[in-house]
Structure formats: C-alpha cells, structure tokens
Image 1 (tube, protein in one colour):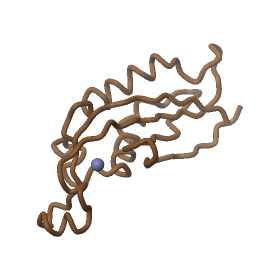
Image 2 (cartoon, rainbow, N blue to C red; image 1 turned 90 degrees about the vertical axis):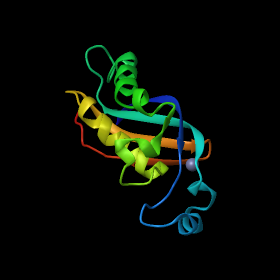
Image 3 (tube, rainbow, N blue to C red; image 1 turned 45 degrees about the vertical axis):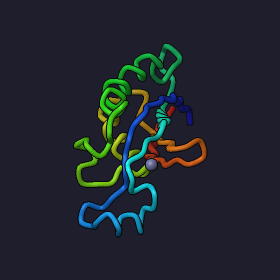
Length: 138
Ligand SMILES: [Zn+2]
C-alpha cells in the first residue's frame, strides 16, 4: 500500500474539563491539564492510494493548501476550547485527531487517493491518531 505523509505545526491553548463538573472535580480527573496551557502541536496527515500518471498520490503543495485552509487557519494561535469543534467535547489529542480527520476527509478524496490517517502530537512522545483503512486496487 502506497502512502504519503506531511507534517504540520501549530500553536494553540487548551484546557481539559467536562462542563458539567466543577474545577475541583475536573482537576481530580485531568490534573494540571484542567488549567489553561498551550502546546506546540504537530499534525501528521497521511494519504493512501495509488500513484497517478504524474507518479504521485497528490501534489504536496495541494495537500498543504487544503490542510492550511481547513485546519491551520482556524486552529493556529487559538484557544481550542473556544472553537465550535470543541464546544461539547474536551480538546484532548484523541478528540483533536478525530475532529481534524473529519474536517479534512471531504477535501481529500480523489480517484487515486483517500485520507488514511491523522495524528496529533501534543509533545514529541505523546500523540493520538484516527485512521481509516480502505482497499485500493492497483
Ligand atoms: Zn494539554
């Protein structure tokens, strides 16, 4: 299976709370993550598929444009908790990966490629991924 991956970076603030709990209970669950803080997030986007006549799944610059328009222009230098995407769910790495995947999916579907996975790194050694496999014949 052929795939390509591009990595992006964005800076954002967040805090992890469940809205029906008070701060004391949220800190009991989420620890110091219940307090507002920031991350230098890394976002990895992977496409799967087959090479087209140009020899690629998708031009990297086209992938860049889509990710910048659909994700980075909204998330970079934001407080994730204030975005509609995280109005009802805490912006954990797991939730960010899932939300970003479905933000990008409708824009990354072609005759020869599909969105295979999204990973969000909160730190260099802690990340979450949402992946979908799809059979793609040569
Ligand atoms: Zn955090």
